[in-house]
Length: 233
Image 1 (cartoon, rainbow, N blue to C red):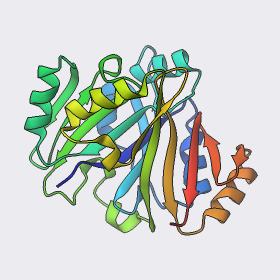
Image 2 (cartoon, rainbow, N blue to C red):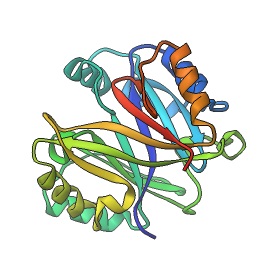
Image 3 (cartoon, helix red, strand yellow):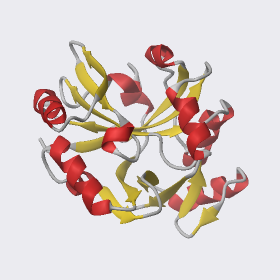
């Protein structure tokens, strides 16, 4: 199975942003993962098709999320999670490339590794192998009942040297990240600049974004420093 983009993550200091995202996109009930307390966080995870959008909120000082918010002034996506069917190969590739794994877990239903953003570039990248492949522990036990029609189509990643970043990610992924919907673009710094979503009624999403006080531009709105594109196809 080719690598695919399974979950995208925003970072915020405001717990109200969890509800705000839910309302703007028209998402159903979210999941609060008790496991993220290990990282000094709380969160809200929402299903979009069989993919997921998450907002993470620091609950303790000097967490990775808080440092990200302070360093970036809340511009750019915080994390992207990709699905693989061979976590062992991914881990071997990262070790060979000297890209640090900052967190690993192996459970009966999923294995995952987070890679250091200073080594990967742009953001925290996690590569996970769920078992069976259609499941997703991080979405909570009821996500199949709480999903809405739609999909994550991709994300944009900027870099002063996008070709080098593309090559670095390809080594870990074992395939071209563009096949998983990652667009590498020229920019002043390495960051996730945009999320691209397929939504049944994008015009309604953009209307609600305006009503929520978010900046709207063409087929997109801005949320926590990320340009979120919404299209019906």
